[in-house]
Amino acid sequence: SEGIDDGLLKKTRICLDKTMGNKELQPRYEKLKTTYSNTKTNSKGVELLEYGHIDEAIELFEQALKRGPNDQNLNINCAQAYIKKIKRDGIDEALLEKTRICLDKTRGNDELLPHYRRLRTTYQGFIDNE
Image 1 (cartoon, rainbow, N blue to C red):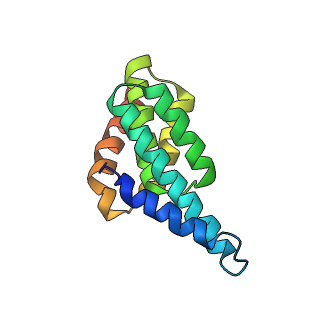
Image 2: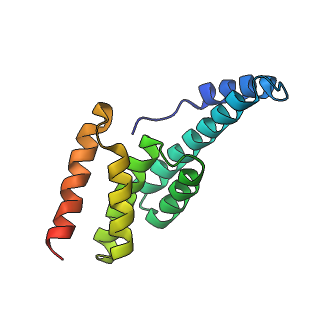
């Protein structure tokens, strides 16, 4: 996953804060605020995953997915974290199901297709070896 420009995120936050309280813009503000928050959380989760902090990364991804369950970047990164946990700890039915759900939500996204294929192949290997 690409790195997030912290400067751009700060500018985004400032712009969002300026619209807070405008009743007409409130629905858009709430949606953008969630996207902003999930982008920061996703970035932190990816960083944790890269340093081997799988459980902490999963916790962040799952928190963010509660706010934005259809966010495809969060879903693909969460699926990757679940797969790393399965590789580390062994097959777990609940994790396999969570992985499938995340992968299903990213199916068809051309931008994520290479990641999806690689993770789907690994996931299928777990299923086939049960």
